[in-house]
Image 1 (cartoon, rainbow, N blue to C red):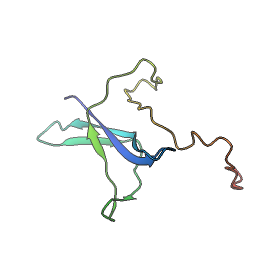
Image 2 (image 1 turned 180 degrees about the vertical axis):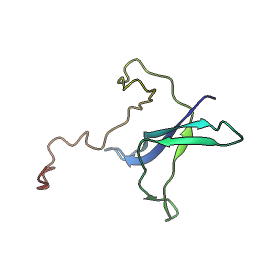
Image 3 (image 1 turned 60 degrees about the horizontal axis):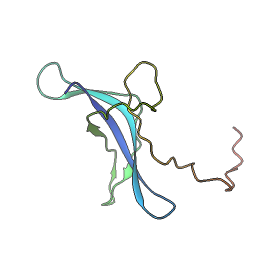
Length: 103
């Protein structure tokens, strides 16, 4: 194993009530050069969220990268994995999203 992706997982409900998970890559982990363990480089910091048992936690999932897809967007030369999931803003057509924020 050469590297792992560092991901956060966010559960959401679809319009028909199904629960799905969206994965966001926030960094990369490599095996440590000396001894057991990993070196982790985070590109973003996860926000804490409420766990199912009511505790505030910040959880990062480390897993092997998924194979690259032909239709995945090309990044800045760094290896990246993109998962296609329903974005929260999709399906919002016709809803008033104006909240008077000046930007």
